[in-house]
Length: 257
Ligand code: ADP
Ligand code: MG
Image (tube, rainbow, N blue to C red; front, side, top):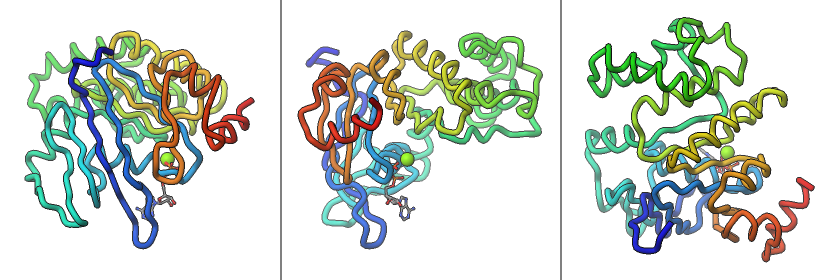
């Protein structure tokens, strides 16, 4: 991460409210190419809402977000002054992969078809190329032998790894993970985190919301602690996890000791 590089994601003053509830209170965040940012914070602090703003699942009420220099959302004084066309939004969303707590695979499609569906249907990739890529991705997530299985035949950890492969099949510039291991039985968490550590080592740019402090310690280039819709503290994993400066960060982390 050098200072000269342009950030892949640049968020400035991002604000979002639901009715009277101000959920994001001015988020400034830069994420550089190949950087792994772990976003920590108590439940309700606005982590998911922020990821959803990045991925166009929510409109901003203020501030701006750019991904690779292109505007995702921009508003001024509560009014949306820059309207992106649906087409522009669709193009941008393709370049951002998202993995949720719930994997939501198509139950009636094989693992391979789950992965090739969007590259063929949305990107227009030739089937043979999409299948070849899907097989590569299955190998990368450790499931080369599961191409013809159906989701119900897989464990939760395997299904989540398929969901990761499915997101990667769109060749995203940026991957967002929203508590990807929270729905898993404890013994299945490790295999998903190991897959994510592999992607991080391969240089994928990732924002990961997780309560897995061990993952943050090992894989994060930067740890960001959020509470009440603002970034309270950020720094290297060592700085934030070992020597947090803010009392709220310390209080949050003390739960994990
Ligand atoms: P986190 O992911 O950090 O737990 P969220 O971003 O999911 O936090 O939620 C932040 C706050 O916004 C919570 O109080 C939540 O209830 C509220 N919220 C989130 N989405 C909506 C919505 N669509 N409508 C109303 N309130 C919402
Ligand atoms: Mg959340």
